Length: 117
Image (tube, rainbow, N blue to C red):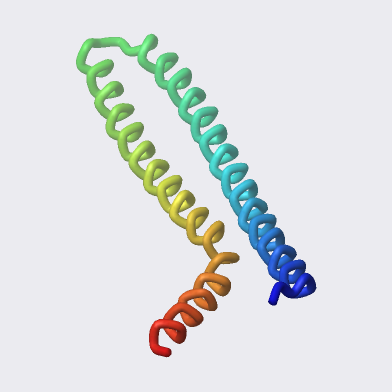
C-alpha cells in the first residue's frame, strides 16, 4: 500500500541530495574559474614583461636566449597549471558525487537482498 509519509520523506531526501551535489558543483566551478582567471592574468603580465625585455635585447643571440628561456618557463608553468586544474576537476567530480554515495549504497543493498530472496 502507498505510504504518503514515506513518499514525502524519500522526496525530501532526494531534493536534499540534489541540493548538496549542486552546491558542491557550483563551489568547485567557481574555484576553477577563479584559478583559470588568475593564471591568465599572470601569464599575460609575464608575456608583457618578456616582450619589454626582448625589445631591449642588444643582439640576436641575447634575444634568442631570452626567448628560449621564456618559452621553457611558459611551458612548465602551463603544464603545472593544467595539472592543477585537472586535479580540481577530479576533486569536483568526487565532491559532487559524494551526496549520492549513501542512497546508491542503500539501493544496491536493497536490490541485492531482493535478488537473494
